[in-house]
Image (cartoon, rainbow, N blue to C red; front, side, top):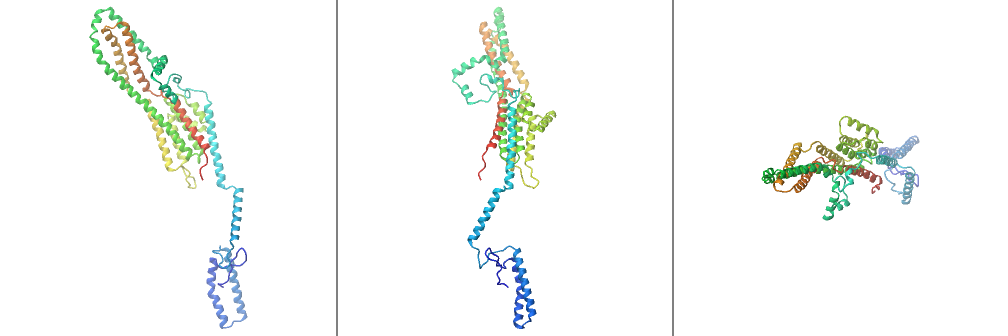
Length: 478
């Protein structure tokens, strides 16, 4: 019974009792077979018993045969191994059949990837359409460059290399240009009235001193005491101007941080969120575009409703939500940052099957840091807007200047200077001192002076470029 070969191969119909079930049955029946052979040899049984044992033996053979058919063959036959060419032929045939099936019937993952890429392109197309619609809108106060752009080199626009070349010309050319453009100076336009009043006052004092000799003799000693007042006045103006300049530089740094944060945030969103959540990523891009313009509108009190309607034309529910936030007193930049954080949290949730479909934790942490930078930038500018230098400082500086410029012609007359030189000297001194005070007051409120149009436009273009690069990026390396 153990020596029978029942292995079914490709070339013959033999069978091998090598399966686990066949081996178990053969092991169980071996003692019975040996016992039958011993009884036949010793006692000589009848033909009926021999037939009974033979039929039992055949039944066991068939049982072993069927059990070997239901169990996989554990090893090849030791007597007749399969030819190598037949195995290779079978392998090649199965491979060709598999390749043909794969080429004719696309896999589910390929179909899913194709539909997902189509969804990404559709989301990007809608974003591009909204941006084109925004660019086609007529100019408003929010989207119009500062009028100072039409004049000399100014701080109200983002400078280029050409601006630096024009600004850094040699001394003679630079001085001639500045003198030629003097009539267009905004500082002169703001202080010309005060300078004229000081000049008229100095003319009256000089004319009065020449008519009354006793008055001229009285003010001669006053000229010496006036020299002690010049140093404190100059120190007062310098400290005030430096504090105002610090506010300007702080606001400009905050906008620079906002620009960098939005660019980095959109880059990470395009790399990690857009491939899995295209609708949420493009909605984040819309909010980042709107962020710069609404921030500009908040700092300059400009209407941004038309801009929001154009950028959010594909998602009207978001527009309605922003309007409701404005009605409750929430400023739009703060609402936008909150919405970005909310969208980021929804894209980081897990699917129902437990598979994580969100961004990696390290990237999520970096995105949250960038959102914190945006909040910090908005907070810094808001603090500069609502917290000026102490008005007492400004009032005191104005009063000291008025006193000094009022007494200055008296001291000049006491020195024996004639009327015309007195008027010219007072006019020049007034222009210098009042001009410094006006510049300090102008940069104390830095937002009308800053290039907010160029900065908001830069944020918009950076977000658009990130999305465009994602749309045209080549496939990854296999």
